[in-house]
Image (cartoon, rainbow, N blue to C red; front, top):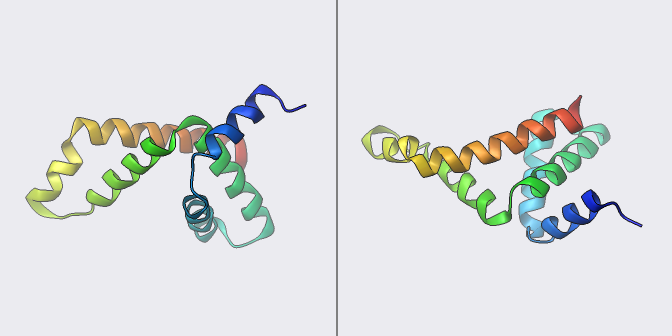
Length: 104
């Protein structure tokens, strides 16, 4: 019988499209090495993030991060917005938790 935590992860994970899962894991592996160990750690990392951040919030944070790359005055709108900071903060906290659970 799955634990409550495992059930929550699978329910939340099902909200993420396969392409989003693959993108996350591939990007993580590119950063951490393309080994079997990295695959396992990056898959774990995704599971933690997905259990903490709903897909819509993940997309929002990812969009803000992309838009922050815009240079100049236009980019400052994306870098300084409270909504941007909140969404990115949620994602960063989930990634920090994943780092602790999966990479240490």
